[in-house]
Image (cartoon, rainbow, N blue to C red; front, top):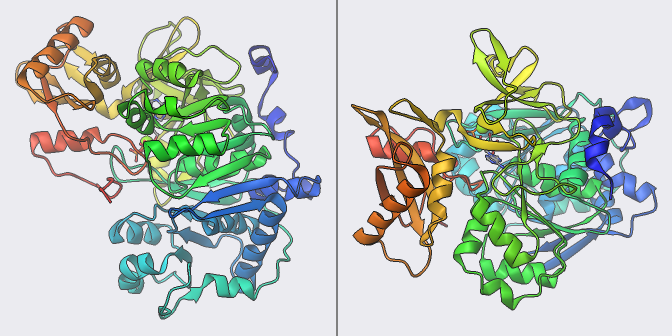
Length: 566
Ligand code: ATP
Ligand code: MG
């Protein structure tokens, strides 16, 4: 294994650029790097995608199969007059067609925008409108319910591709299987410029209305390098990323990075189910697993006895992203899987992993890890007009990244001003607060929006939540500030309980006492509410702003990404 601590001093984005093939004339295309390159290098027979359907179906694609099918898809688009800059949207679930369409779209030089298939009509319509969707892939029922009624207000939409084939064809739509059957699998990958727009991803909507982050083809430099460094991806890995491509994780690390590495990637169509997940890990001999804290908490809730019934010995590397990963969860996973979850931090805007407990370093439970090689991260204080870099350790400030990494977003669609405002003096301001310790590890404090100011103290919700989940009864916790005349704000916590615990007054009192002992009375919550569940986004993030709005009787704001029980 490489010595990253030494290497990171020399590694820069040029190093990572040289890990790719490129097209003639310094052109670069994500799909070429992810798929075609392997076939040209004689790895066409390697299994690329192993898919499991909701009702037990199974399909497998080699790299050569993927090349052929993405060639066909790209050809189908260009034969119909679409190509560079066409905005291709998907409303498909995790079916093979989604993966083929994503790569085929990129291959054609067009722009891919995956949306969660579970979105309701309005979130779909508004995202299609702001991105000027020209092509849409959808299931027949989703199309009929969510898009057809609004088609009059989507003047840019020229072609709708439906899969699987419906019983009665909807007017003004095309049957995907049928058009593909009539298209030859011959295509020359588009010679895209590294700066050409490739992907449009909407943020999770945790703090407000989702923003459309634009990414370009050279993002693949980061996807490839960070997949190898932070997720330890190798060619012989069986890799499972549980994220849906409707969230950036499901595209950067659920499609691009594993294929760039030449690994075999698993796609599971069904939603979370503890037993099904453990069974899949065992059956498919998964070696690298990438998931999110929300899923890990659900697994913890399901108990430590369940995984003992499965042989999970093939698991070599586990990583988590999306929300802070409590030290509690890291310790639990090390015990249950024999290897801990490696927390890593990034955003839709960063396009790829920026900070991580990466493969070749010691995990510090509860920390986000260290900036990846070539990533320049700092804790800064914002000063009118400028920024001050905080060099001393353990001082909270805003997490900032030196601008210019390849997977950096290039704009917020239709919101250039907002984009410009996130940069200052050559640094991108992330909107998250963090601290760096003496050893260079970064610790998440909270989102700037979520930080609580109580009686002169600045309280990061993560610290309070982490203390609460250390209580034996608590499964999840979310902490907000509620207005208070004397203190400005006081801390209120919402918790869910592990199986077997009842929401009694006694437990509530015990929790208050536990928090006060752990945190001190200045920081500990004054109120604790035991809830059945917490509101979360489709990407699995707890929506603290919604808890707060409900608590103090404010409008709920944009809840288009709120997960609704299916
Ligand atoms: P929106 O920007 O619409 O409010 P969002 O910020 O949740 O939504 P994403 O881009 O999906 O949208 O999430 C990025 C954010 O998730 C980060 O800014 C951070 O707040 C949080 N996050 C991601 N990974 C971690 C992590 N390892 N630890 C703590 N927080 C994390
Ligand atoms: Mg955000």
